[in-house]
Length: 137
Ligand SMILES: [Zn+2]
Image 1 (cartoon, rainbow, N blue to C red):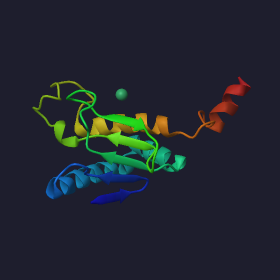
Image 2 (cartoon, protein in one colour; image 1 turned 45 degrees about the vertical axis):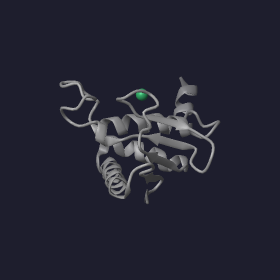
Image 3 (cartoon, protein in one colour; image 1 turned 135 degrees about the horizontal axis):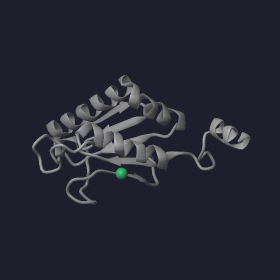
C-alpha cells in the first residue's frame, strides 16, 4: 500500500500487510505533527516550496544498525528517505538514555532536513531574500 501526504509518499516496502499499514500510519502521523508544530512547520513548507516528491520507505540498514538516511536517486522519486520509527523506542538499543535527538520523531526530522537540503533545485542554493541581504552589507 502507499499513503500520500503531499509532497510525501510513504510506502512500507518489504513489510507484510499489517506491518506496512502500521509503518505508513506511524510515519504519516509524524508528518502531520510536523505541520502542526511551529518548529517543524518551516521544514514542511520548505518541501512544498521545492515542489519535489519525497518517498519515505523503511530503513534498509545500509548505514549501520541504528540509523536512517536520505538519498538523492534517479527515478520517480529523486528524494528518498530510509527511515523506520520502530527501531527508536525508549529502552531500545538505538536510544542512549539522556541523549537528545534520538527519539523516533527527532530522527525523522533530522533526516528530512538532509532530504530538503539535497532536494533543492540546482541554482537555487540560497533563497533570493538572503542573497539580497548579503549583497547590501
Ligand atoms: Zn545527519
